[in-house]
Amino acid sequence: MDDEELVSDRSPWPDDLDHRVRQQLTFVAEADKLKTILRASPLAAADRRENDAEHSWHLALMVMLLAEHADEPIDVGHATQLVVIHDLVEIYAGDSPVFDAAARAGQQEREESAAERLFPLLPEDQAARLRGLWDEFEAGVTPEARFCKAMDRLEPMLLNWLNHGGTWHMPGATESTVRSRESGVVAGSTALGDVVGRLVDEGLARGWIRRDDGAESPFPDPPH
Image (cartoon, rainbow, N blue to C red; front, top):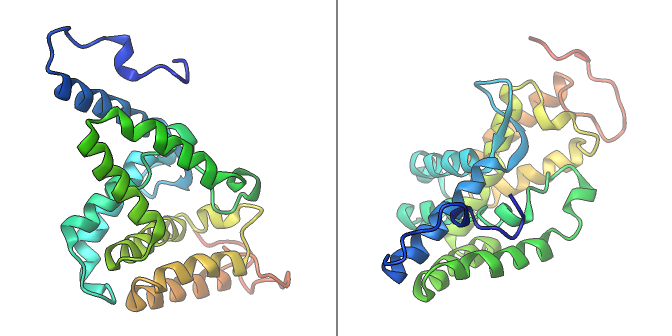
């Protein structure tokens, strides 16, 4: 498929379809591309990488289940909308693995450009609503956005733990870069930040995370 081609262009809607419905279904069809965007994180339950749609679903589930651990009261319904929307721009911008500095270069500009291309596919009122949700998540200043960003940090760390390191084995991952991700969890939930801190401590001990000073772990071979 050409980069400029919409999914719905391959099978155009009937000519007499209501214009608003046409716009909404065009956006829904385009969102199907999210299922094709692979992330660096490996799945815990299968030998393959996670895609963006799976990631967004997992975050929505985590928001529902873990909201009680937020440091501030949050509107779970609103937070769920934030995590469902937050990665849609990667349909056009692609994923930017956190431990790959080259891939992250220009990320903000790519995602802004993608947002300007994607959300206007919707009717004007809904385009403004979804763009507002995306902007809110990116800014991270509301209680819901802070907690959602914490879940966005927590989910890949759980997958790494369940995979005996996962992306913690990437060249750009060391104790300090992993700890910076841990701080993102703490920013939304002190309690879950404590859990992640325990996982990182144990990951270091097991040799799943490289120490910044290059010191050898007492357990250099990850246990299986």
